[in-house]
Length: 430
Image (cartoon, rainbow, N blue to C red):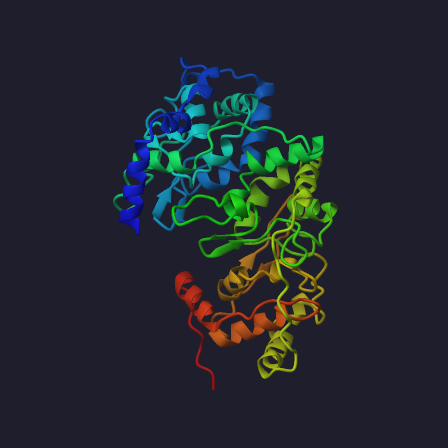
């Protein structure tokens, strides 16, 4: 499959005029091509302020920060094709982007063409392509204020051949990259249009919340209908009443984006997005995002039948929930005042994909810590205490009680994720 994919890529490179359209960087001509980032000494303070906001909306810090400093790169991103390390994007001349001009920067961020060659779509240039010229100019001004950090990163050292050959990405771009800017849709209100811009451009929400094909490209026909993200699952953001946002008001969605709590409690990559990005956005922009998401048509989403509470497995799950979970999540699944997730009527629990629930049961989790709600509650691991079948039964009870209904969780899927996460084996039970 991978060798066939490589052949497809190479063949696509020869697509002539189509290739030129996809790889053309003429949009970057609006940017300066003389002064490099490291030589900028006095950027416009107002542009810097606006640029910091653009950086927050794009969540740059989350993926470009590891243990060497903010924006110094080396954050590991696992893909089906191998592991990538994020770039050092500080103004360091040798290991960062200090030698880039504004035009080089525009080419990298919006066209996926960096100083080391073509970028992989793990860096969501496919979404950033929608950023306006003004937002890009402001972001450039902000980057000039970042402290340089010397940290040389070999970004694609963890990618096997042929995927470590950056030229391969030319074929991917030809097949899948939409090299065009943002355009408003006439049927959307001004608020919805602003929300769409934030979702599709800086927010790059579809990078996680849309499924991808075998070559790693988003499936446009399933826009924001949920997608697998390594050992996590980014849920459906459409108006599906069962597993999407159909039952949530715009006000509840806004509160969730701002604090990570509104019935459901954010954990994993979403908690990181809220901590690094969403909590810094204005209430107006968060409302715009929520309003736009509420305007999306529901994905095809049939509600599965509820598992009968009288089955032996559900009865075992109920007892296990009472002993291990009810103290924090409530006897009736009501949660604990925003500190712990409410389970009753929680759409995120009812997805066909139970990855997130299995994940936190196996290794625990931590809610977002935000300025509005400083204390993010923690979830302990139960891998040591429950075997795969017991975890599956407990989750079946949670996903099929208090009005919830969801497909059964397979013990084999718990086992696969236990192995992938290297979670502890259960202690012997007597």
